[in-house]
Structures are given as C-alpha cells and as structure tokens.
Image (cartoon, rainbow, N blue to C red):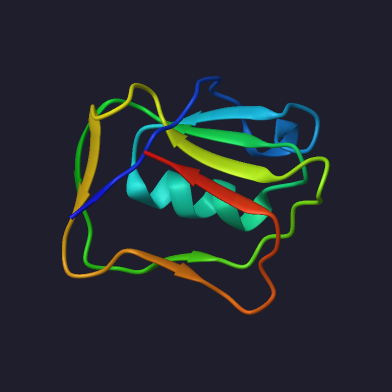
Length: 99
C-alpha cells in the first residue's frame, strides 16, 4: 500500500507545460501526467482509494529549483493499493513524492 499527498488543478494534456499544478483522479491519468510532467509541475491525486497492479513509472526530470512534485490532495486521504507502486527510473531527477 502506498499513500501519497497531492495538490489540485484539472487541465487538458496541451496545458500541462503551461500550468504547474495538475489534478488527477485515476491511475491512468496519473501515469499520463507523470509522463508529460515538466519542471515545477505539481501533480495532485484526488482524495480516495485507488487500485492498480501496474507500476507507476517516473522518468521525468525536474530541476533543483523546480522539482516535479506528486502529492495527495489531503494528507492521509489518498491511498494507492495493489501489487505494485512507484518505480523511479534512472533518468528521473528532482522528484518529490508527498504523502
């Protein structure tokens, strides 16, 4: 079980690079947003319990001054259950996971 803390802001794919905060409410959307994340983005997972058997792969690159943050909407209110969890790839740098 993995609990994560996220922030909010629901945007279309084309807006990801323009806005630092993106709200997600599904594991498929979380992976999609992580794959497109840019330095400074804050990815907020909505409160709830999520089930996944897929790895949540992170290969994105933040910067020292603008890390990519993955957080739950409220501390302790977002839970990811299943057979797998986050996989931080060798190319991922300056990634913050809160929760």
